[in-house]
Image (cartoon, rainbow, N blue to C red; front, side):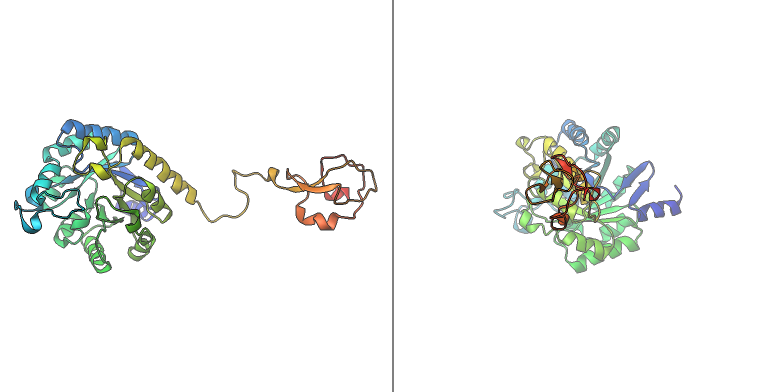
Length: 357
Protein backbone atom coordinates (compact mmCIF):
# COMPACT_ATOMS: atom_id res chain seq x y z
CA UNK A 1 0.00 0.00 0.00
CA UNK A 2 1.36 3.45 -0.90
CA UNK A 3 2.57 5.50 2.06
CA UNK A 4 0.24 8.42 1.28
CA UNK A 5 -2.76 6.12 1.33
CA UNK A 6 -1.55 4.58 4.60
CA UNK A 7 -1.33 8.05 6.15
CA UNK A 8 -4.81 8.99 4.96
CA UNK A 9 -6.24 5.81 6.46
CA UNK A 10 -4.41 6.45 9.73
CA UNK A 11 -5.91 9.92 9.95
CA UNK A 12 -9.30 8.24 9.52
CA UNK A 13 -8.52 5.90 12.43
CA UNK A 14 -7.63 2.88 10.28
CA UNK A 15 -4.26 1.15 10.57
CA UNK A 16 -2.93 -0.97 7.71
CA UNK A 17 0.17 -3.15 7.57
CA UNK A 18 0.46 -5.98 5.09
CA UNK A 19 -2.80 -7.91 5.12
CA UNK A 20 -3.80 -6.51 8.53
CA UNK A 21 -6.36 -3.72 8.72
CA UNK A 22 -7.60 -2.41 12.06
CA UNK A 23 -10.35 0.16 12.47
CA UNK A 24 -9.61 1.97 15.73
CA UNK A 25 -12.88 3.87 15.38
CA UNK A 26 -14.47 0.70 16.79
CA UNK A 27 -13.53 -1.23 19.94
CA UNK A 28 -10.39 -3.33 19.55
CA UNK A 29 -10.27 -6.01 22.25
CA UNK A 30 -7.06 -7.74 23.32
CA UNK A 31 -6.90 -10.93 25.37
CA UNK A 32 -3.68 -11.00 27.40
CA UNK A 33 -2.40 -14.54 27.97
CA UNK A 34 0.58 -13.57 30.14
CA UNK A 35 1.55 -16.55 32.32
CA UNK A 36 -1.83 -18.27 32.23
CA UNK A 37 -0.43 -21.01 29.98
CA UNK A 38 0.99 -22.59 33.16
CA UNK A 39 3.98 -23.78 31.14
CA UNK A 40 1.96 -25.96 28.79
CA UNK A 41 2.09 -25.22 25.07
CA UNK A 42 -1.08 -27.26 24.63
CA UNK A 43 -2.85 -24.99 27.12
CA UNK A 44 -1.40 -21.89 25.45
CA UNK A 45 -2.88 -22.95 22.11
CA UNK A 46 -6.21 -23.76 23.78
CA UNK A 47 -6.20 -20.24 25.22
CA UNK A 48 -5.73 -18.85 21.70
CA UNK A 49 -8.68 -20.91 20.44
CA UNK A 50 -10.89 -19.85 23.35
CA UNK A 51 -9.94 -16.19 22.94
CA UNK A 52 -10.82 -16.26 19.24
CA UNK A 53 -14.10 -18.00 20.01
CA UNK A 54 -14.87 -15.25 22.53
CA UNK A 55 -14.76 -12.67 19.74
CA UNK A 56 -11.59 -10.73 20.63
CA UNK A 57 -9.55 -8.98 17.95
CA UNK A 58 -6.11 -9.94 19.21
CA UNK A 59 -4.17 -12.07 21.66
CA UNK A 60 -1.05 -10.79 23.37
CA UNK A 61 1.80 -12.61 25.05
CA UNK A 62 4.95 -11.37 26.80
CA UNK A 63 8.52 -11.82 25.60
CA UNK A 64 11.13 -12.09 28.34
CA UNK A 65 13.07 -14.52 30.49
CA UNK A 66 13.82 -14.25 34.19
CA UNK A 67 17.35 -13.17 33.26
CA UNK A 68 16.19 -10.36 30.95
CA UNK A 69 13.86 -9.04 33.66
CA UNK A 70 16.01 -9.05 36.79
CA UNK A 71 18.82 -10.86 38.61
CA UNK A 72 18.67 -14.05 40.66
CA UNK A 73 18.61 -12.63 44.19
CA UNK A 74 16.36 -13.74 47.03
CA UNK A 75 16.45 -10.85 49.47
CA UNK A 76 15.94 -7.12 49.81
CA UNK A 77 14.04 -5.38 47.04
CA UNK A 78 14.35 -8.51 44.89
CA UNK A 79 12.02 -10.43 47.22
CA UNK A 80 8.24 -9.73 47.33
CA UNK A 81 7.10 -9.00 50.89
CA UNK A 82 4.01 -6.87 50.21
CA UNK A 83 1.22 -8.56 52.17
CA UNK A 84 -1.34 -7.45 49.56
CA UNK A 85 0.56 -8.92 46.61
CA UNK A 86 -0.66 -12.06 44.85
CA UNK A 87 2.99 -13.07 44.64
CA UNK A 88 4.11 -12.48 48.25
CA UNK A 89 6.89 -14.80 49.39
CA UNK A 90 8.59 -15.16 46.01
CA UNK A 91 11.65 -13.54 44.52
CA UNK A 92 11.19 -11.54 41.34
CA UNK A 93 13.43 -14.04 39.58
CA UNK A 94 11.40 -17.09 40.59
CA UNK A 95 8.13 -15.31 39.69
CA UNK A 96 9.36 -14.54 36.17
CA UNK A 97 10.61 -18.11 35.79
CA UNK A 98 7.04 -19.26 36.41
CA UNK A 99 5.36 -16.62 34.29
CA UNK A 100 7.52 -16.36 31.17
CA UNK A 101 6.44 -17.73 27.81
CA UNK A 102 9.17 -19.86 26.22
CA UNK A 103 10.45 -18.11 23.12
CA UNK A 104 10.18 -21.24 21.01
CA UNK A 105 6.42 -21.12 21.65
CA UNK A 106 5.96 -17.69 20.10
CA UNK A 107 5.74 -18.81 16.49
CA UNK A 108 3.25 -21.65 17.17
CA UNK A 109 1.13 -19.24 19.21
CA UNK A 110 1.19 -16.55 16.51
CA UNK A 111 0.47 -19.13 13.82
CA UNK A 112 -2.52 -20.35 15.82
CA UNK A 113 -3.75 -16.77 16.11
CA UNK A 114 -3.57 -16.38 12.34
CA UNK A 115 -5.45 -19.65 11.82
CA UNK A 116 -8.20 -18.29 14.09
CA UNK A 117 -8.41 -14.95 12.31
CA UNK A 118 -7.08 -12.85 15.19
CA UNK A 119 -3.86 -10.86 15.56
CA UNK A 120 -1.00 -12.21 17.66
CA UNK A 121 1.57 -9.83 19.13
CA UNK A 122 3.68 -9.33 22.23
CA UNK A 123 5.24 -7.08 24.84
CA UNK A 124 9.05 -7.06 24.63
CA UNK A 125 10.92 -6.29 27.83
CA UNK A 126 14.44 -5.77 26.50
CA UNK A 127 16.40 -5.25 23.30
CA UNK A 128 16.85 -8.98 22.64
CA UNK A 129 13.08 -9.46 22.80
CA UNK A 130 12.53 -6.71 20.21
CA UNK A 131 15.08 -8.29 17.87
CA UNK A 132 13.46 -11.70 18.31
CA UNK A 133 9.94 -10.37 17.65
CA UNK A 134 11.18 -8.55 14.55
CA UNK A 135 12.30 -11.93 13.21
CA UNK A 136 8.71 -13.11 13.69
CA UNK A 137 7.41 -9.94 11.97
CA UNK A 138 4.90 -8.98 14.66
CA UNK A 139 2.52 -6.29 13.37
CA UNK A 140 2.84 -3.98 16.39
CA UNK A 141 4.21 -3.76 19.93
CA UNK A 142 2.93 -3.29 23.46
CA UNK A 143 4.87 -1.42 26.15
CA UNK A 144 4.06 -2.49 29.70
CA UNK A 145 3.44 0.01 32.48
CA UNK A 146 6.60 -0.89 34.36
CA UNK A 147 8.62 -0.27 31.18
CA UNK A 148 6.99 3.00 30.17
CA UNK A 149 9.94 4.92 31.65
CA UNK A 150 12.54 2.76 29.85
CA UNK A 151 13.40 5.36 27.22
CA UNK A 152 16.10 3.30 25.45
CA UNK A 153 13.65 0.39 25.07
CA UNK A 154 10.90 2.70 23.79
CA UNK A 155 13.36 4.19 21.31
CA UNK A 156 14.38 0.72 20.11
CA UNK A 157 10.74 -0.32 19.59
CA UNK A 158 9.81 2.95 17.87
CA UNK A 159 12.63 2.56 15.37
CA UNK A 160 10.90 -0.53 13.97
CA UNK A 161 8.34 1.90 12.55
CA UNK A 162 5.50 -0.24 13.82
CA UNK A 163 2.51 0.91 15.90
CA UNK A 164 2.96 1.01 19.67
CA UNK A 165 0.31 0.41 22.33
CA UNK A 166 1.61 1.66 25.67
CA UNK A 167 0.16 1.22 29.14
CA UNK A 168 0.40 4.33 31.29
CA UNK A 169 0.34 2.85 34.80
CA UNK A 170 2.17 4.97 37.41
CA UNK A 171 3.39 7.48 34.80
CA UNK A 172 2.99 11.16 35.57
CA UNK A 173 2.43 13.75 32.86
CA UNK A 174 6.12 14.49 32.41
CA UNK A 175 6.92 10.79 32.02
CA UNK A 176 4.06 10.27 29.57
CA UNK A 177 5.15 13.27 27.54
CA UNK A 178 8.65 11.83 27.35
CA UNK A 179 7.26 8.45 26.26
CA UNK A 180 5.15 10.05 23.52
CA UNK A 181 7.92 12.34 22.30
CA UNK A 182 10.44 9.48 22.24
CA UNK A 183 8.11 7.19 20.32
CA UNK A 184 7.13 9.79 17.74
CA UNK A 185 10.60 11.22 17.20
CA UNK A 186 12.01 7.76 16.57
CA UNK A 187 9.60 6.61 13.89
CA UNK A 188 6.33 5.62 15.57
CA UNK A 189 3.43 7.29 13.80
CA UNK A 190 0.72 5.05 15.26
CA UNK A 191 0.55 5.42 19.04
CA UNK A 192 -2.15 4.22 21.43
CA UNK A 193 -2.11 5.01 25.15
CA UNK A 194 -3.95 2.78 27.61
CA UNK A 195 -5.15 4.05 30.98
CA UNK A 196 -3.88 1.52 33.47
CA UNK A 197 -3.75 0.97 37.21
CA UNK A 198 -0.76 -1.25 37.93
CA UNK A 199 -2.31 -3.15 40.80
CA UNK A 200 -3.22 -6.83 40.60
CA UNK A 201 -6.17 -6.89 40.93
CA UNK A 202 -7.06 -3.20 40.73
CA UNK A 203 -10.15 -1.60 42.25
CA UNK A 204 -12.73 0.31 40.20
CA UNK A 205 -12.33 3.27 42.56
CA UNK A 206 -8.71 3.64 41.49
CA UNK A 207 -9.37 3.42 37.76
CA UNK A 208 -9.88 7.17 37.18
CA UNK A 209 -11.49 6.69 33.79
CA UNK A 210 -11.97 10.46 33.47
CA UNK A 211 -8.29 10.53 32.48
CA UNK A 212 -9.09 8.81 29.17
CA UNK A 213 -10.63 11.75 27.26
CA UNK A 214 -8.05 14.12 28.77
CA UNK A 215 -5.22 11.86 27.58
CA UNK A 216 -6.74 11.64 24.11
CA UNK A 217 -6.94 15.42 23.78
CA UNK A 218 -3.55 16.06 25.35
CA UNK A 219 -1.57 13.61 23.21
CA UNK A 220 -3.81 13.48 20.11
CA UNK A 221 -3.80 9.70 19.88
CA UNK A 222 -6.00 6.64 20.14
CA UNK A 223 -6.75 5.77 23.77
CA UNK A 224 -7.99 2.77 25.69
CA UNK A 225 -7.63 0.83 28.91
CA UNK A 226 -5.50 -2.00 30.21
CA UNK A 227 -7.91 -3.18 32.88
CA UNK A 228 -6.88 -5.27 35.89
CA UNK A 229 -10.15 -4.94 37.81
CA UNK A 230 -12.35 -7.95 38.39
CA UNK A 231 -15.30 -8.31 36.01
CA UNK A 232 -16.16 -6.24 32.96
CA UNK A 233 -17.87 -3.12 34.33
CA UNK A 234 -14.86 -0.80 34.21
CA UNK A 235 -13.92 -1.82 30.67
CA UNK A 236 -17.46 -1.29 29.40
CA UNK A 237 -17.70 2.11 31.10
CA UNK A 238 -14.43 3.22 29.49
CA UNK A 239 -16.00 3.04 26.04
CA UNK A 240 -18.32 5.95 26.83
CA UNK A 241 -15.25 8.03 27.71
CA UNK A 242 -13.51 7.37 24.41
CA UNK A 243 -11.59 4.13 24.97
CA UNK A 244 -11.22 2.19 21.74
CA UNK A 245 -8.63 -0.42 22.78
CA UNK A 246 -9.50 -2.76 25.66
CA UNK A 247 -6.96 -5.17 27.15
CA UNK A 248 -7.96 -7.83 29.70
CA UNK A 249 -6.05 -10.82 31.05
CA UNK A 250 -7.55 -14.10 29.91
CA UNK A 251 -7.48 -17.72 31.06
CA UNK A 252 -9.42 -20.92 30.46
CA UNK A 253 -10.43 -21.22 34.12
CA UNK A 254 -9.36 -19.32 37.22
CA UNK A 255 -9.69 -22.59 39.14
CA UNK A 256 -6.71 -23.93 37.16
CA UNK A 257 -4.47 -21.43 38.90
CA UNK A 258 -1.56 -19.52 37.43
CA UNK A 259 0.34 -16.33 38.22
CA UNK A 260 -2.36 -14.06 36.73
CA UNK A 261 -5.43 -16.28 37.03
CA UNK A 262 -7.07 -14.37 39.87
CA UNK A 263 -7.70 -11.21 37.81
CA UNK A 264 -8.23 -12.89 34.42
CA UNK A 265 -11.49 -13.35 32.56
CA UNK A 266 -12.78 -16.78 31.62
CA UNK A 267 -14.18 -17.51 28.12
CA UNK A 268 -17.84 -16.80 28.90
CA UNK A 269 -16.88 -13.57 30.66
CA UNK A 270 -14.77 -12.50 27.70
CA UNK A 271 -17.69 -13.18 25.36
CA UNK A 272 -19.84 -10.99 27.57
CA UNK A 273 -17.18 -8.28 27.56
CA UNK A 274 -17.04 -8.30 23.76
CA UNK A 275 -20.83 -8.11 23.55
CA UNK A 276 -21.26 -5.33 26.11
CA UNK A 277 -18.31 -3.25 24.90
CA UNK A 278 -19.69 -3.23 21.37
CA UNK A 279 -23.19 -2.47 22.66
CA UNK A 280 -21.78 0.47 24.65
CA UNK A 281 -19.96 1.72 21.56
CA UNK A 282 -23.11 1.53 19.42
CA UNK A 283 -25.10 3.30 22.14
CA UNK A 284 -22.85 6.38 22.07
CA UNK A 285 -24.23 7.45 18.70
CA UNK A 286 -24.45 11.17 17.99
CA UNK A 287 -26.16 14.18 19.54
CA UNK A 288 -29.77 13.74 18.49
CA UNK A 289 -33.15 15.09 19.51
CA UNK A 290 -36.49 13.97 18.15
CA UNK A 291 -37.80 10.82 16.54
CA UNK A 292 -35.36 8.00 15.78
CA UNK A 293 -35.81 5.13 13.35
CA UNK A 294 -36.59 2.85 16.31
CA UNK A 295 -39.42 5.01 17.65
CA UNK A 296 -43.01 5.72 16.66
CA UNK A 297 -45.28 8.54 17.73
CA UNK A 298 -48.28 6.23 17.40
CA UNK A 299 -48.52 5.61 21.14
CA UNK A 300 -48.09 9.23 22.17
CA UNK A 301 -51.03 10.96 23.78
CA UNK A 302 -53.26 13.00 21.50
CA UNK A 303 -56.77 14.48 21.47
CA UNK A 304 -59.73 12.17 20.79
CA UNK A 305 -63.50 12.48 20.82
CA UNK A 306 -64.66 9.99 23.46
CA UNK A 307 -68.46 10.34 23.05
CA UNK A 308 -70.66 10.26 19.93
CA UNK A 309 -71.32 13.84 18.75
CA UNK A 310 -73.74 15.43 16.29
CA UNK A 311 -73.05 18.31 13.94
CA UNK A 312 -72.98 21.54 15.97
CA UNK A 313 -72.30 19.88 19.34
CA UNK A 314 -69.85 21.73 21.56
CA UNK A 315 -66.53 20.17 22.54
CA UNK A 316 -66.30 19.83 26.32
CA UNK A 317 -64.05 18.25 28.94
CA UNK A 318 -66.45 15.32 28.95
CA UNK A 319 -66.41 14.46 25.24
CA UNK A 320 -62.74 15.28 24.46
CA UNK A 321 -59.76 13.69 26.18
CA UNK A 322 -56.02 13.40 25.84
CA UNK A 323 -55.42 9.67 25.44
CA UNK A 324 -53.29 7.18 23.60
CA UNK A 325 -52.71 6.52 20.67
CA UNK A 326 -51.16 9.56 19.01
CA UNK A 327 -53.14 10.04 15.79
CA UNK A 328 -55.10 13.07 16.94
CA UNK A 329 -54.11 16.69 17.46
CA UNK A 330 -51.35 17.33 20.05
CA UNK A 331 -52.66 17.87 23.62
CA UNK A 332 -51.27 21.42 23.63
CA UNK A 333 -54.40 22.44 21.66
CA UNK A 334 -56.75 21.15 24.36
CA UNK A 335 -57.71 24.58 25.76
CA UNK A 336 -58.09 26.07 22.28
CA UNK A 337 -60.55 23.34 21.23
CA UNK A 338 -62.75 23.53 24.32
CA UNK A 339 -66.01 25.31 23.42
CA UNK A 340 -65.70 24.87 19.69
CA UNK A 341 -68.46 23.18 17.68
CA UNK A 342 -67.92 20.16 15.47
CA UNK A 343 -68.77 20.55 11.77
CA UNK A 344 -69.96 16.97 11.32
CA UNK A 345 -71.15 13.91 13.16
CA UNK A 346 -68.27 12.36 15.08
CA UNK A 347 -68.19 8.84 16.43
CA UNK A 348 -66.63 7.90 19.77
CA UNK A 349 -62.94 7.07 19.34
CA UNK A 350 -62.27 9.49 16.49
CA UNK A 351 -58.92 11.28 16.45
CA UNK A 352 -59.48 15.06 16.41
CA UNK A 353 -58.33 17.02 13.37
CA UNK A 354 -58.66 20.69 12.42
CA UNK A 355 -61.14 19.98 9.62
CA UNK A 356 -63.64 18.74 12.23
CA UNK A 357 -64.03 22.14 13.98
